[in-house]
Length: 169
Image (cartoon, rainbow, N blue to C red):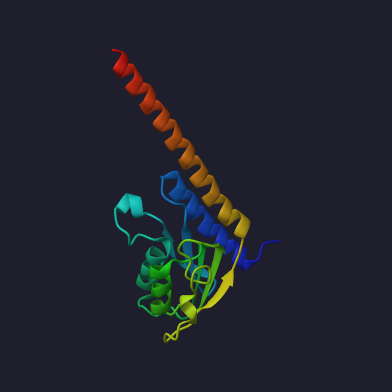
């Protein structure tokens, strides 16, 4: 039987899958207040051509709009990948109550992997629940990057073949 936390992480995973289908790094996020999703976001940096289009930032913006204020102190955030420094800062500023994340991020994780920004003496300290549905969250990222490497390798091979054909003409 699935827990409420798993239900919300599955919603975040659906958003991550949609990002992957669009060629974006698959990260999805939902914000929950009183048992209801009030904000959804997914990675769209490539599509929108901006560094600010992270799943958490998008979800926080939508939750603030829906709830009519910037203080999300009664809300929990579910995200498939450990938040980066920018997103951790936004989480602190929005006063998110609890952060649930799936996969650790050894390159940019700011909830414990590289640094824990929530341990710094800011005016708000969210709770962290690490590793929720870790295998599924890690798996979607692993699959995405494996497929991306495979596509790039095939493209390089086609380019070499094309260059060889042009040289023979």
